Image 1: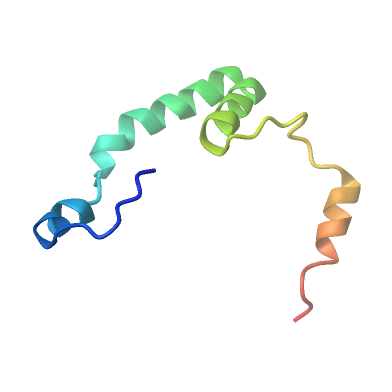
Image 2: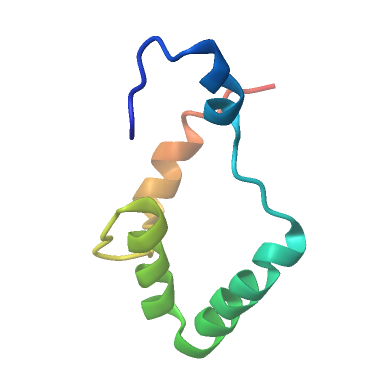
Length: 77
């Protein structure tokens, strides 16, 4: 991340530009990820969890205890 302090007014428009992508721009990448997950299952999920979330999970299985613990945190209607 670049931190820019007190930029000149003439630079504001350029600094505020955000990269934009259309669905067409990312569709190929998303389809490749889906195909990888279809072919490689859990190992692909682990790869993309690391890539996008920066997390290495020991397991992607949610235990019954974890489900029960989470259930108690949901407010009752």
